[in-house]
Length: 398
Image (cartoon, rainbow, N blue to C red; front, side, top):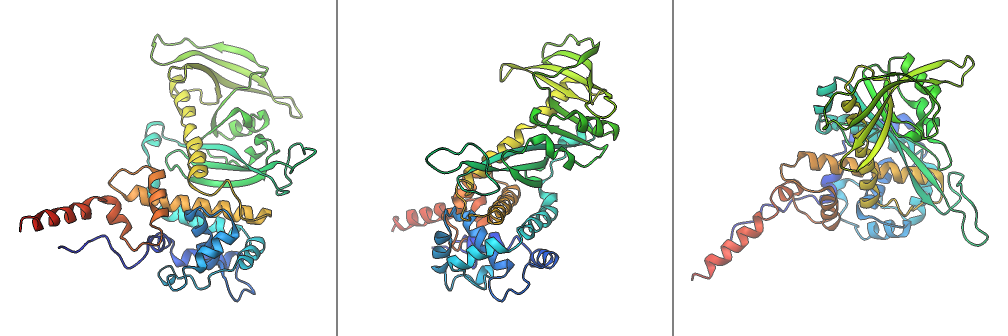
C-alpha cells in the first residue's frame, strides 16, 4: 500500500504555534519587560498555555494545568519550556501585564494583514470603512467593578464590555478596549482616529453630537443610526430618484444643536431606508453629503460583520467561562482568544478548499495533538481514505 501523506513530524497545535514567529514574542516581551525577575514560566510559556486553553476550550485552571501536564515529553515541537502547575498559571495571569499579549496580537495582525485584506469595498468608495461596536461578556464575580443590581440572595451579576474596531475588509479586530458593562458606548468615540480617508460606522448607542462635530470639523466621515428621540430641524428635502429597487424613502438635510459652550449647529444628512430582507425601516445620519443615498445605507449594513465576529468568538472559544478571578486574568484570556481566532482566520484564508470557521476550529480541537499535516489534510481530507479504499479493492482481486 502507498504511504499516507498526511502524517507530519509536528502536532497540529505545534503547527498553529509556529505561525507566531519568535521575534514577535521577543519584541513584545522586551517592550513590556514581562519576563523581569521571572526564572521559570516566561511570557512564551504563558502564551502557549493560554492558547492551549483557547483551542481546547478549557473551563478552569485545573483543566489547563492537568491536560498540559499530561503532555510531558510532547512539547518540544512547540517549544514549551515549562508546563505550568495550576498555582503557577494563576499567579502569572494575575501578575504579568496583559498588554504584552495585546502587543503580540497587534504584531501578528501586522504580519498577516496581506492575507486578510479584501479591498473590494475600498475600491468602490475610495475610502477605508471601519466598524466600531461593543459586546458585553457577563460575569458573576466582583471583576471590573461589576454593575447591575445585587440580588438579596446570590452573586452580583455584572460584566466586561469589549469595544472593538474592525476594518470592513479584514473581519478581525484592529483595536480593542475594555470597560465595565455600565460604561456608555459613546464615551469611547474619542478613541477614533481623525482621518479624512476613513468612514466610521457605529450603532446609535454611540450617538454623541459633540464627537460628531469633531469628526465633521476634521473631515472624518461617519454613518450611524439616529436615535428615536432626536431633536432636529429639516433644512432641505432631496428629490428621491424614481428607482423602486434602491430602498431609499427619504433623503434630507437636517440641523442639530450641539450642547457645547457655544451651542453650535451641526448639519447632517438623514436617510430613511427600507430593508426588503428584514422588512423594516431604518433612519441613518451621516456627513457623507455627496455619496448616493443607497450606498450610504449599504455602508451601514456592513456593520453586520462585527456582529458575526462577536458571535464567532463566543461560539468557538472559551468566553463563557473565565479561568481567572481578576481583571488582568480576564484581559489575558480575551487577548489570547483573539490571537487564536486570528491564527484560525490565517489558516482559513490560505486554504483553497472551503471550510466553515466553526468546522475548522472543531477539527483543530479534535486533532490538537495528532501528528498530521494540517494544511495538506484540510485541502483534501478524503485523499488518503480514497487511496486506502482503492488499495483494498485491488487486494480483493487476488
